[in-house]
Image (cartoon, rainbow, N blue to C red; front, side, top):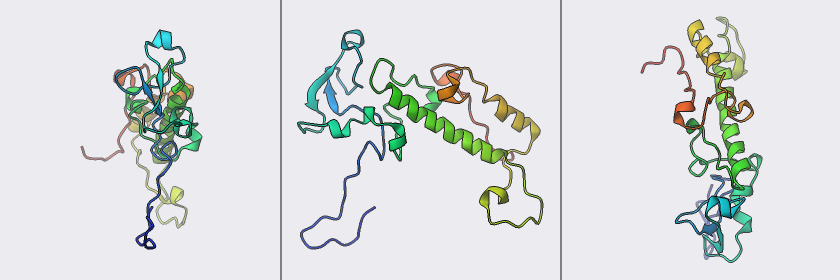
Length: 186
């Protein structure tokens, strides 16, 4: 959000907190590795460590340590650092970012579940008048075979509390793809 007009000599921009908007669970410090990494729990085991230098040039960057920001405190997410949800990412094990990444991934799978649940709602009876959008929508999954497949795709075995049944294993091959709506032309 920005304003079109700023008083003379003032700016009309505002830097947003990157741990809240576009949260990536990234480390604000430089790493001994060739590119930024999450802070290792055990640098000896991981083979790299944080440097005492902020990536943005400031002396103190604890205020932007997104790898320690709880997912519930974030509004939007960018999955570059934690990896994409459809890759059934392990969430950067061995680092302080693990809990944040798994939390962000779990939220994503929760949103997928919510969308599928909405698409599974039965169709309205013809002529039923309502202002509530959840009851006035047309069912997107109406074919029983599709409904059965949607429910079957929720049976993944990888940490159901995090992956909500959408993954069988770590990696893209472990992901259970989402069913497109019935009648959708490909």
